[in-house]
Length: 240
Image 1 (cartoon, rainbow, N blue to C red):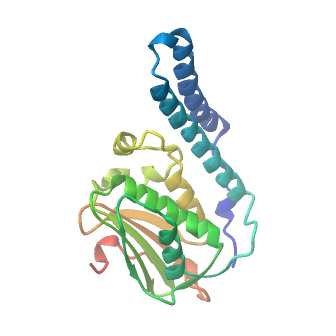
Image 2 (cartoon, rainbow, N blue to C red):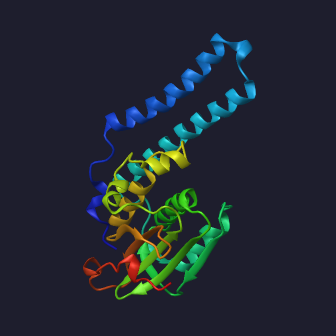
Image 3 (tube, one colour):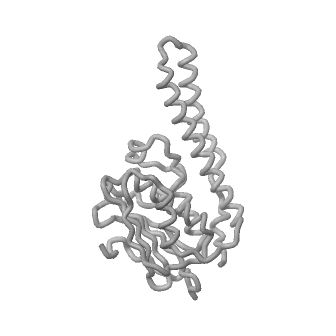
């Protein structure tokens, strides 16, 4: 499989990365300095919980930056045939989520890909769905012409049409995301799209049948003659 040049495009700027890391460090420092100044007024359990949240955010930012750096260096392993239905089942089996995930999987839908990278896309999309969904999350795998299609839908607030491209920009977090999760990095969806494009594919978001978000990952089927010419089917046209 030809690896897309998009995986080597310019990455997160040093100033952006520095700002995010310094923000997390500043939060941790402020918590600890306040405790040092007023030890008798500090609830140790509460302090440790807040400090751990800040450490968790630092760890998440560093992990996401490492993934971006690895992608820009190119694939470390040779792409191989991946059955998307099997990949979805394996990923769901490893997770312990707030909302059970419904599956609608067509078997035999295979792509040429780096499994750990496509697994990362699914993980990021599921994490996002678990953050926003109220009662329902569904993952679908299907074949559409010369393309494989993996969808993740939820019944949350959805994404306004005016924001559907902006959410894939690095370090972008909408108000709803900030309200629901204070530890997010704003890199998950950007990484997912970068991985899709590196595999000569695409990642878009639309509206699900429930009014929530519908993320659609499209990849060329293994053996496709002209995978770059595939046309994305809108979320609204999906079978219920």
